[in-house]
Length: 277
Image 1 (tube, helix red, strand yellow):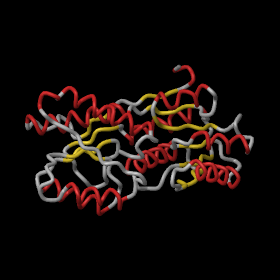
Image 2 (image 1 turned 60 degrees about the vertical axis):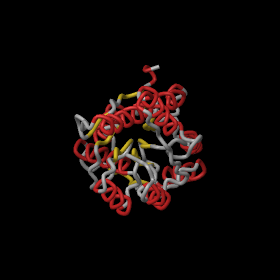
Image 3 (image 1 turned 120 degrees about the horizontal axis):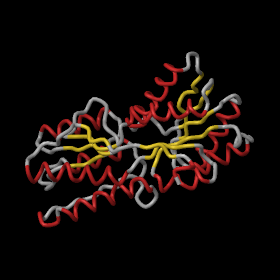
Image 4 (image 1 turned 180 degrees about the vertical axis):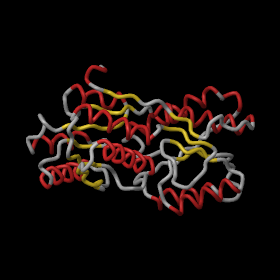
């Protein structure tokens, strides 16, 4: 679980896990949580080595993996030694888990691009803000978004992803720098939980009336930003379902031996606009 107590998305994943645990309470099963504070590979690798040690008593694992070769190798070794792994929220490039539970990130990237072109049919310039390339889900989403736009708008200018550590101060500074460096930017892909920082920079540059800003996340978190006009639209991601179905898949496999019906258990995505609320 990332950033305990500070990340609504992660807390809803945990709520889903707790809900499925209650459904299986008669089977004497339990989840033990490991909390990540900086979301880096070193911290996650340390936990994995601890979990895979002899006599640890763990029967399976649910993980949102950092996109790192060392993590992939460790997970492959764990599965080969009999520990089933379900990836949750994000998959891992080149790794085959028992199953993946989360959004269809490729589809979501295309949904965002399609919606953006409905907002600006003659779009010429867009900027992308996202965190470092440590989460495969972010890479999949951005790649499919840019691919779709380039198919539909030949010669479109897409400013490459700006990497930051996801603090409000850095998000504000990077947004401001981007808008100053590229004043003709017509849309901003802002996949961050610090949307207030994005909006502050947009207002300072006097772009709050003509710049299309969009994001991804939970309906509850994004509602006020859409209603207040701070973002134009968003792609809803239901993190509660990530936890619930990941928990159900791993417990069903461990207690019944049944393999998941699908290797990818996708949670439905939807477009949020002002009229949604």
